[in-house]
Length: 207
Image (cartoon, rainbow, N blue to C red; front, side, top):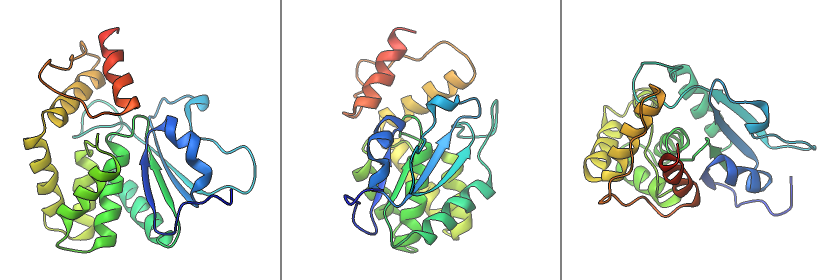
C-alpha cells in the first residue's frame, strides 16, 4: 500500500495492464480472470501489506454457451465485497476492462446510488470507462439480486441499441469464444479512444 491512495468511495474500472500500474492506490481490488489464464497474466501483489483482493474466474459470456459462465453467486460475492469496502477505494479489472469489470462496476454503482437511478449508474460507468460494453449475464444477475425489476437490463439494452461499438464488440467476442474467424471492426464504426481497445482492434487485423 502507498500513501497515495485514491479518495474514499472511489470506484476505478480498468484493464489488467492499467490495474498493474495503479493497484496499490486502492484499498480493495476485484479481479476477473479467464479459466485458462496463466499465472504470469494475473494481477499479483509481491509485498505486504496488500489491498483486500478477490478473484472471480469465468469467461466473458453474454449468455450460457461454450466456456465457463458467470453465476449468481459470483455476482453476490462482488456486491458483498463492494458493500464491505464502500468507505474505501475500489479497483475493478478484467483483461481488457471492457465487459466483466464494467458490468461489475455498473452493479456496484447501482447498489450505491439506489433504486430508480439505474441509468445514472450506467452513465457513471461510461464516464469511468467510455469503452464499456457491460457483460449481459453479470448485469442480469445484479438486477435480480438488487431487485431492480429489469431496469438495469433495460439500461444496457438501450446502450447496445444506440452503440455500433457495443454491438460489434459483443459479436466479435462471441465469435472469438467459438473459435471462429475474427470479426473486423467495420470502417464506419469508431472504437472509443483507449490504448487497450486500440490494441484489441489492431490485434484482430493481424490474427
